[in-house]
Length: 123
Image 1 (spheres, rainbow, N blue to C red):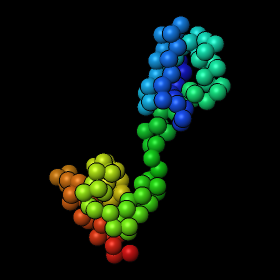
Image 2 (cartoon, one colour):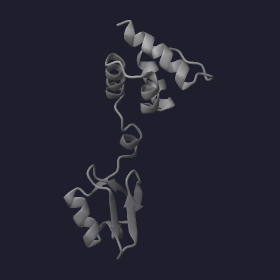
Image 3 (tube, helix red, strand yellow):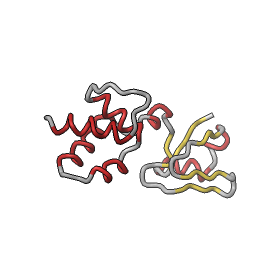
Image 4 (spheres, helix red, strand yellow):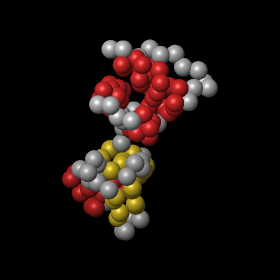
């Protein structure tokens, strides 16, 4: 079994002869017979489909890039509500970890944001 996903520029892949449809963000396991299908092979060779590295997919967003995006939003004076919408709770926890901020399990997006913004502003 081989895992594949869409390439960076692809939105969807569909092959009616094999019945395979892959949408953005999905990872599908294909048998060796399916991978050798002419249309799937062409999509893999052309970059429409790529082999999925599951670990890479899970950590798709690089931590330093996440921190950089957060800092640029804070330093440019973005409204806190816009910053809050731009980052998930897990993203904020990751950023807090990069600033060595200790978190409780009861922390919310608001409380984490407040602490991280103080850290960024103090630099």
